[in-house]
Image (cartoon, rainbow, N blue to C red; front, side, top):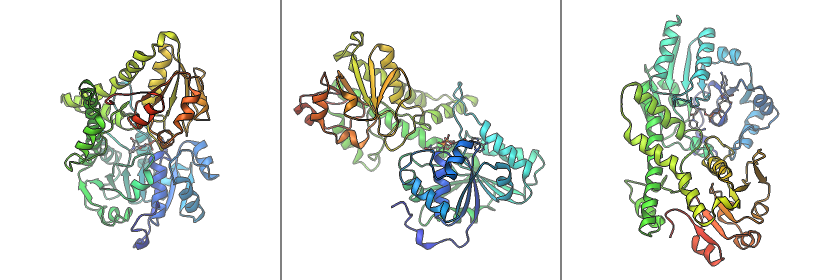
Length: 440
Ligand SMILES: NC(=O)c1ccc[n+]([C@@H]2O[C@H](COP(=O)([O-])OP(=O)(O)OC[C@H]3O[C@@H](n4cnc5c(N)ncnc54)[C@H](O)[C@@H]3O)[C@@H](O)[C@H]2O)c1
């Protein structure tokens, strides 16, 4: 299932690639490159991560990844190491996939990128192609290029490539084997032949641009996707006022090929390690050039207000002052991952506790480690005696659960669908009070 359609074609020539950073992007990319036929060394500063990987334990959850990593490690095509300096020195293609988290002022923390750049500059002794996969602000790859030159590295010894990643956690392998595009920002044509071979890209459209152009394609994509979500959330509020089901509007919009059905779900809003961080970073970059970001600001403002909107809905039927018990299903930022970074579900849980609710949770992948929350390993047990159930992440097993069992275990009957993912009529027939935003 996770093998690319063009897998059988094979490479003209395999390459030796060092992937720096064994996180969601680095690990998935390293495994995929090994499947493509390359020899891949994946390195990380996190000793525990590398020790786990060497023992066949995968530090993150991504469907299908564990099997691929084990298979290609056994085939001696995929290696893991904490010997970063040696690996960087010995490999001629270096792919950087380290984290670029947000700082307090919204800008991107580039310290991990800088560490890697410094290591390459200090050890480079033969021609290398350095490929940035991490999402970085416009101008970062130009800065990397300048740093090499200023540190005395001759420009015939290296090429910098900006190759942003567009995978979605939970579907990362599918995305990497079936990309809708590959974006390469370069300064010269020299690395192009290698880049065309790197991903066995078949008929995938290749977009060649400048270093900064590639960086901005990534930010523009995330800005646009976030805009669709905030648009959906604002439309759902308007639908509420007119007692119209937003699901009908979504269907009407999604069938228009100019709009498309994706990223139009109303709900708690976007989260995760990318969209919020990248929007803040883009705003910060724009501000450094005195560009106003009215649309970007509105998109973030709508998103930030979604949790309050849902908590108000809950408060209308179950005032927090009564110290009621609620159960939250789903804590990850979306289904199919164990990633809690900027998860709206976590913010919802924290704010529910602050308001005085007693909170129980269940998530198929993550048990929360907090004394303020009772985290269950059984989905049905988690609703015992609860006054309300909130769906914060749309895992399949919530959508298709046994609602009579849920109703029998709950003390109250409120189900707040914060992802517009349930069949409301069916729940009402079951005697439950089904609520949401943009839901009739
Ligand atoms: N997660 C996604 O869905 C996604 C999608 C597209 C793009 N991105 C971008 O890709 C980048 C990586 O994201 P991620 O989610 O994989 O992050 P992550 O936090 O899961 O992984 C980053 C890894 O880099 C390692 N690292 C940090 N400094 C290092 C160094 N000097 N040498 C070696 N390893 C080092 C960390 O230990 C960590 O394991 C970010 O810029 C992110 O914005 C992420």
